[in-house]
Amino acid sequence: MKPRSILINTMSAFVGTKLDEEIKTGAFLPASEKENLAEERELLSCLDLPDCYFWALHPLDSVKLDGVLRSKKQRMLEKLDWSIAHMRENPISRTSRVGTL
Image 1 (cartoon, rainbow, N blue to C red):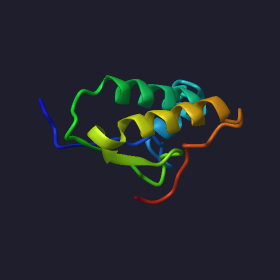
Image 2 (image 1 turned 45 degrees about the vertical axis):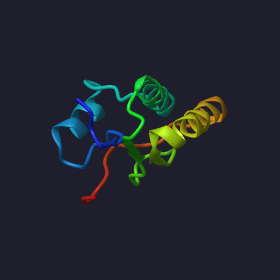
Image 3 (image 1 turned 90 degrees about the horizontal axis):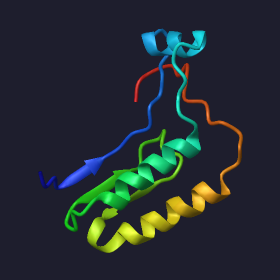
Image 4 (image 1 turned 180 degrees about the vertical axis):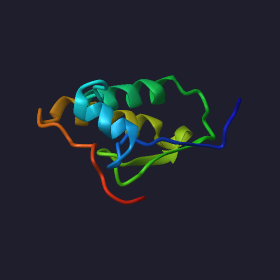
């Protein structure tokens, strides 16, 4: 498979959904923001698609990234590395959001 673009979004639970209830009861434990960024970094580092456009500019993405991998991959990896290394321990709440995006 050689996609022209890859779009990623960070998981978020909206009010009234089953996932929101499972988080509230402790049945589901969401990944921390540092874990999310480490996973995103691992995905990006493994991509061998030079002409693919990588997009992580969703309002819920804490680190905004985008670009064609041929020219931007290394810069995006460096931005993720810096963000992971300097991330505060305060969790970013991705639960109980109201509305749609």
